[in-house]
Image 1 (cartoon, helix red, strand yellow):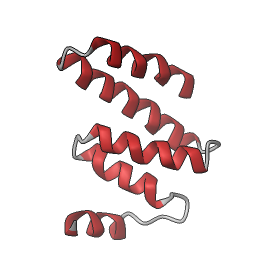
Image 2 (cartoon, one colour):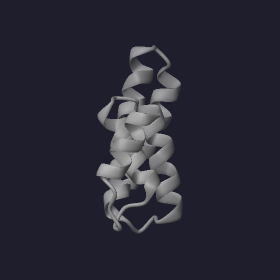
Image 3 (tube, helix red, strand yellow):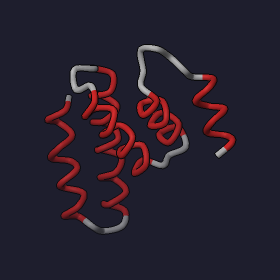
Image 4 (tube, helix red, strand yellow):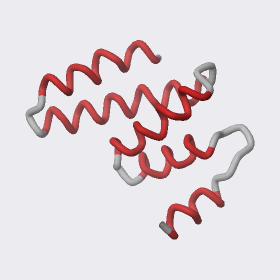
Length: 87
């Protein structure tokens, strides 16, 4: 996607992986499920990064809220239970 490529180029940072930057893009566009996938990948590659850990926890919470709105409470609980482990 052209818009995403421009965002990644504009927000490139040697301190952040491309997955983290992509996660930021999706998060800002309220696509929390895709943001979560990107942050999970960034976290798996660098679990010691506090910034990624906080973003992953926030994405978990936002995905949980999506599931609450969709009345998928079991799925929401799974994400809510996981988020505090990351903070």
